[in-house]
Length: 68
Image (tube, rainbow, N blue to C red):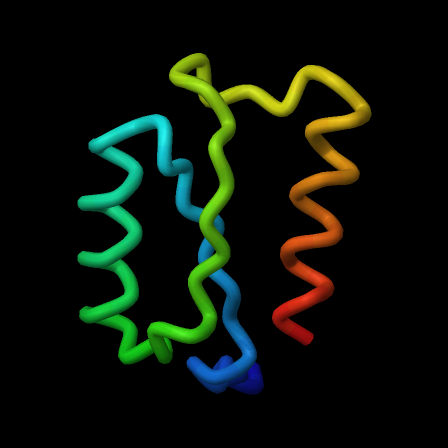
């Protein structure tokens, strides 16, 4: 069995600025996994933590792709 390692520079973290727990969790995960701060994508997703509308999904996609 082959072990694969993911380079932290290739990881993107989606942070929900509407949820304080998301902010804490994202920063903790980033720090532990040595993911660069520039790889955090911040979006206001609301407190229900659900991407229900297509418009919200498109907004998140654009922000992630802009980090490219």
